[in-house]
Length: 458
Image 1: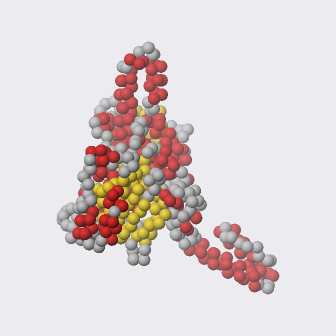
Image 2: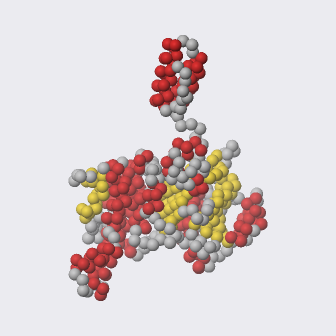
Image 3: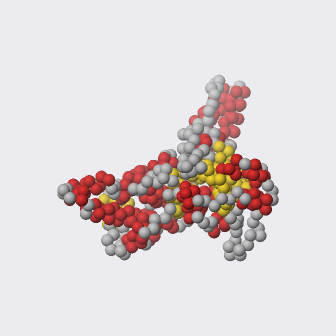
């Protein structure tokens, strides 16, 4: 199951935008200036997939169209505003899900291939548009609805200005809350600082889940001829420890800051009111750190990665979606160069959408995997695919895909102007002493700023 198209008709700054996505591509990134709608698209997609799974039309989706629920007013809403996604299912079927300010309508591929699609797209009348699309709405059968239900949907917003994760939030978790997950494990997960309690409860749940499986295993006939030691070895081979596995992923991040996840000394909760106690520590030291003592970038990174990882742990996910806004937030470049592969490594069978301002992150996508949003002269937004190849110099992406005109600051531009002026003066100077001074300054600027220079006659 893949998202293979996005459609915007008179939706905010998107006048008439159709974005086609290859069904064989499993990751995409959105890049563009602030205000071009990257975060809005991620939110729209995550809510669309969540609402399909829950078979509802959420208030949050209404609000993205501008509906004021306190006043229950739609007077200022563009009645000809639509957002749609195209979904390709594993049964080789395509469905179109269209939203306006009031309704969600589901259509089959036949509509897209018919003349009515062109009529709908080009119609300037709200009533005509709605009537055209409503006349092709289908009521899904149970099997069709199942094919449009994801196993897991994860959405992680950019929260650079939000309150940081606190140790009190982690401590508010407890065994009693964690055990409730045995009864209900939701499909949709928001991964953010305010949901760190959910992450910690799920971590406790997975610890207790293994304990429960171990008790069942020890009571099974297959181990009656084994010693307790051999039985445990056999059990552990097919039942990995969640804390040990989490440490593998966290330590890839933490070791760059001379830190590690001290899972060996974890205190597992026994009483319902108890919490899981496990800490970060300085490598080769007994010094334990509070999570709030980590840098904001590392703290957010490990909790994002950790939360996603445990949702996939010891599960086969057939259809997953992951939406991440600015994964590079507050991270230094050395943490970012492999960040896309890192997120891929903790998921499987999952389509990933990222929004980023980082050319380092964008360079980890193929050009056809980049959705570049750009402002038109009238303030509307259009899109294009990337140009620079995967793995290209991030500076090339800034110039070619981000359309940054130059990479120098004001002082650098000033020095470039002086550099070019010196080049001219050197060529026309007839005074040997003056020429030597000019050459010296020319070389100093060229070396300092790595300006390309041709050989000049002395």
